[in-house]
Length: 167
Image 1 (cartoon, rainbow, N blue to C red):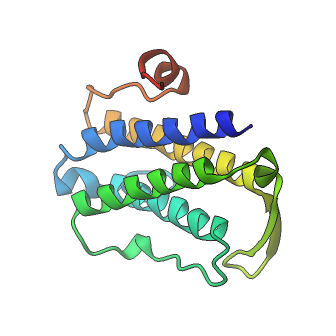
Image 2: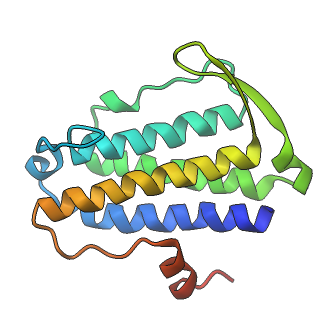
């Protein structure tokens, strides 16, 4: 299980970096153009992915009162992108430091922002974070196409598996 989850977290870092490389070439206007989708713009979609990875990292670290506040970030988009990638690296580091398969079976309880209690295993959470990021990266690809951007690298897991040296 550990190797599979590490594969997902390493893929997540790579895919996020592929997307960031494209996004950093966009103007603020392109990043902030209103679009129909889960979020109002490319920038807000990126900030959502970053926020989600951050909150799940906090929950995996068993933070009692995680802080969810990246959507109102006031720094540059480049700074936000670097911080987003750091969250992805942190998720991978968390998976890497688990010293047994049983660690991934550990159940933890957290409270969502609507004050609902939930219980999940570590492995479910890691898989969810990676899937969530993949889903929203897919939305960003569509947003980029609507913006006329045609040079978008593939970010499919199978592409990563066949092209990235993971020794």
